[in-house]
Image (cartoon, rainbow, N blue to C red; front, side, top):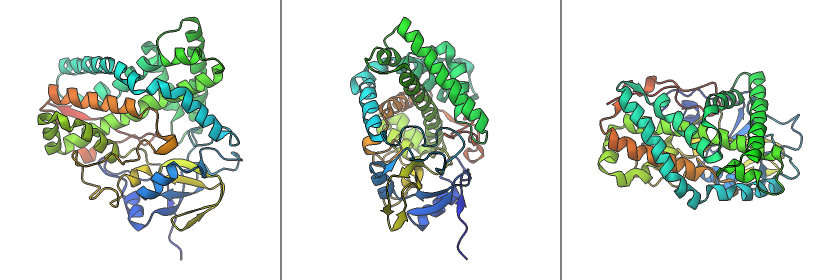
Length: 392
């Protein structure tokens, strides 16, 4: 009798470690037949070398030639089926060229003082609040929202509205809510573009609106994708990053006394943080191909397991050890190659700023709960902590 096929999502267990079943699969091999949350068949790739290579392989794409019959990862619209299959490569190259300048090193340097100011203000509020406190609601959640509002030109007064819409769009287990959230998020994007055409500012949305040949619908879609990705994923990494450090007090103390270790700590946090439970980044095979001895057919759904790859002992010796002095720069948290995440410099900037200010202002920060008892968000694509109790 053949072994049972693993059904996603994975049960997370402790937020400090990758899901136990994913750990087992990674140890058994690099490619696995699985079933997604919708019951559809897929191939899960867990090896670092394989994931890294496939992230930059033109034989895989985000779209499917027949979306109606395509295997899905979930019931949200973030399932890899958005876009035109025939023009995907050209569309991606054009959009990347359009957006790349907004995330240039120069623009990130210009944004740094504002990120530092926003972080300091939130930490002032935390100081006034006093211990104990929930660092998730006090810092990890609001900071990325403030920063992405600043970058895109989204009114901060709208934060509750778009936070609700992005949460709806990424909701798991409720297809109607997910579809409604996506449609309303797009409508909100159209509303913002119209505002920027009337009253432009010094922000990404205004500059896109002033770019010749870019239709409003595309600007709305791009801006809302940036809004979602620019704060949801950073919320997750900020919360899990501080948790990893505080759960390893010797690592926290090393940062407090050695701020020069912060850049390395950022990369180790990005490697070690386990986000989401759906298996990985969804792609569709555009032709028949062989992945480490497994025959994959055109149209098959392939999940590139970035968390599993980031815990591959062939790439990261003793991968379950959290070590801020490790050379972790080869992680695939932001992808690799032509589809490398444009927002990676922004996420790094926020993580670096938070660690710099937290360690200097709250050197005695510590967890106020057993880390293994902390709950993670199972009802959303991005996962992450529901709370982070601390005191100092």
